[in-house]
Amino acid sequence: MHNTGQIVLDPRLSMIARLVGGCESYADIGCDHGRLGAFMLQSGQCRQAILTDISEPSLRKARSLIGILGLTDRVEFAVGDGALALTRPVDAVVIAGMGGATIAQIVGDGRERLGDARLILQPNVAAPQLRGALAESGYAIYDERVVQDGRRNYVIICARPGKADYGLKQCVVGPVLLERLPAELTPYARFRLRVAKKALAGASASGDAAQTAPLEREIAIWEEVLACLQR
Image (cartoon, rainbow, N blue to C red; front, side):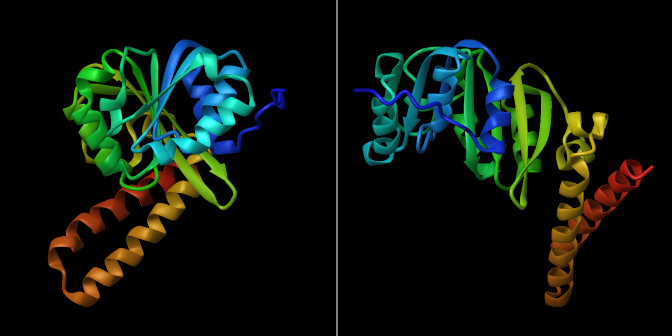
């Protein structure tokens, strides 16, 4: 018998699912346990899903969960390197829980396979680098959210094919977050400011002049953002 228990997502994955929205098909690159895919299918947000990972052992948890829930007939599992594992076009692609540089490489290397799909991206680090790389790969950011999950604040970036050119402040903060200045940005801005100040102290102590100026610029940006948020 199939387990018909409803998947419940944590705040981070819940926001990702919300930003994917309704679609005919979606792909989760690096799907890990497959909980997001299971939720998307169970909730009716999508009819079909492609769940991918770098190796067959990495896919086992997702295969097991999808099988237990009786959703196998609506899922295609694919082993491969990033977006190169995709076998057909989908409406939306999720790449979450990786470093920003890794996500940027997946998008750049897999640009042809990604086609016209919307991208919902959640970088654990290096979000500014990812934003710049998206513009270089021919994507424009159309939505951004900050979501708190436990003691961590995560940034989720949504992009679609299009032309974009982001300045330093837009890359550091995010073009949509900078425009909207949502209340949720405050704790994240404070965290980024603390990280940058700590890094600056380390760079100054070691005499790393090459890192000092960029960190000083980043600190100034976050201080300006926090001043705007506190008005």
